[in-house]
Length: 368
Image (cartoon, rainbow, N blue to C red; front, side):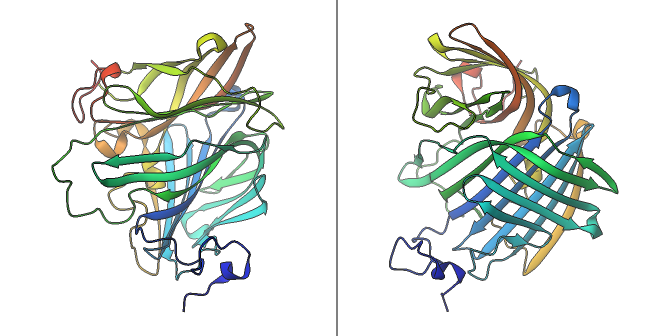
């Protein structure tokens, strides 16, 4: 039986029931959230959440992470999807869409793991639709997906190990992406002929008092962007006005012995620049990214829930699955008129393989 809740809504785009998503087994549909104090004086409490649906794998998974004082607590859950894509619950983690494209609620109720949360997101402006991401390795499709990104403000609370923290006034970013990228078990057949791994990704949504700045880039091994964009969006605004920057590039000061940034400058040409000063780092491993056991879409049975804690100081940053981070950062935006705005944002980094502007020549060499 392929009929599910979604079939009672006018959302079909093919003659198939909603349960079927084309023919690519790597199709996914995903939510992401992060949040932090708007002012650095508000402390280093940082949270992140993710929720993914993999229709052709018949799996749904979710994660909720809290970072404070160098400690990162990670709650992960996975279940069989049973072909029902409209059920936004995985064990103790659930999402409600209160007002499409504006307000969402995230709930975590895992008392047996000493983690609870009630979090409401309110968008600051209409979401940004990032340029479609299409990348092939030879004839094989590696990525083909769309993402919307939206900065917002939070209300609610988080409770870990009996300590409740208010997140009233927090800011952050949420995104939704859907399409094709590697999920589930790895393809056992390698490319023919073999090709070296190379993936360079920066993503930096920033929150200021009166608006948001967005920058991202995917570069090839020579530093040429195959997907890049920079945009300013005033609160209450909508993409398509005068906020796009024609020129954008990023220079990174890599921390010695790592592939993580000590500082960065986003050059907007005649429109100004953004100086990024990382303050603390969140490991995306907590949400399942590159996790050897909890990678996205893997089958853990009918239902599985796990808590895992990290001490950031004890993680070996040379390990491939520790490279992917979001650095909570102080950001300073100087526009074309010389106006200076100071805010906060994340500077997400994943650099695998060669990247000539960074001086990386092999799969995992590090900055001198």
